[in-house]
Amino acid sequence: MSQWENNVRKVVPYTPGEQPKEKNIIKLNTNENPYPPAPAVKAALDGFSYDDMRLYPAPDAAELVDAIAETYSVEPEQVFVGVGSDDVISMAFMTFFNSDKPVLFPDITYSFYDVWADVYGIPYKQIPLAPDFRIAPQDYSQPNGGIIFPNPNAPTGVLESVDTVEQIIKANPDSVVIIDEAYIDFGGVSVLPLVSKYENLLVVQTFSKSRSMAGMRIGFAVGSEKLIKYMNDVKFSVNSYTMNRVTIKCGAAAVRDKAYFEETCTKIINTRENAKKELTKRGFTFPDSMSNFIFAKHRTASAQMIFNELKKRRIFVRHWNKPVICDYLRITVGTDDEMNALYKALDDILKEAAK
Image (tube, rainbow, N blue to C red; front, side):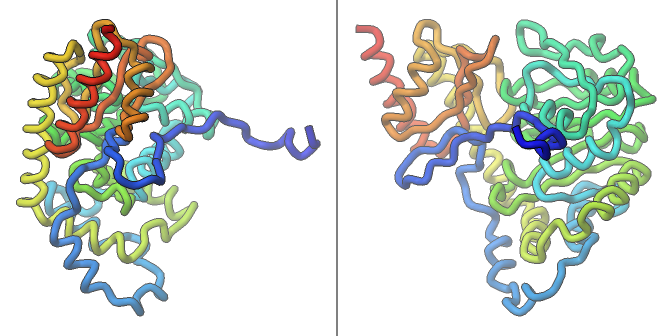
């Protein structure tokens, strides 16, 4: 090893879902929305001036911040925006998790949390979920330097009630509590109204799922003015120009197109509920998902085998070879046509496996 390598910050990076380059596949592995962005986004793109690209974007992304504040009935000073919710959460880790006490998050959860903790040298403790993949609020009533968890959880899709979440927030007045609501729009109730009650609560959401804009990279957080000011102080000390002009304009257009947002969310919810019936008929079990994916295990066939066989048929789902969850597949909810193709492929695979 070279001498300079002794000074390298060494971490095990986050592994994103596979992004296949070939065409004509059914991609159900990264929880993208199967429908295009709102028509208002296309109109915003068509109206964007080519010459504007030579100019820096507004550091405060005010056009987007104002649109989010208006939509969610909060003040602009309560909104922080970033390049996807990953950027927002990363900035929150850097800003708020600076205690010698460990940050708490579930042991089965979004696998970027421990990566950020390692990158920033933050101590952390993973709290085991119950056998039904639920959070036990009392497990978070212990000394900590902060708390974060997704609701609904990823990759399980399990939704905790507002009362359960508030119980955790209330028990931790001396820590910042971050609720990652990437999937809340697919049937859950947001805890966003609680930010007016708890100064230490930060709620994070994304445009990648329910607003069909994963390629644009827009995330935002809502919290007390004090929390958001601290985050902006750190952001502007790192990079003032994190969001480009096109993204700001398109994001503002997307968040204001409420009718299209509700229409596509309803489509996905309906397809998901039908998928629960279809997967159950084929011998799968799963926690009741309130997200845009289903975390499913087959009664007899191995997840690894099904994953491999689906891939041969150009259908991509997600599988983790990790303890506790290695028997599960995370299946993103696609269009009805995509899901029907999945069911047909599963019928063929399971029939062959039963021989």
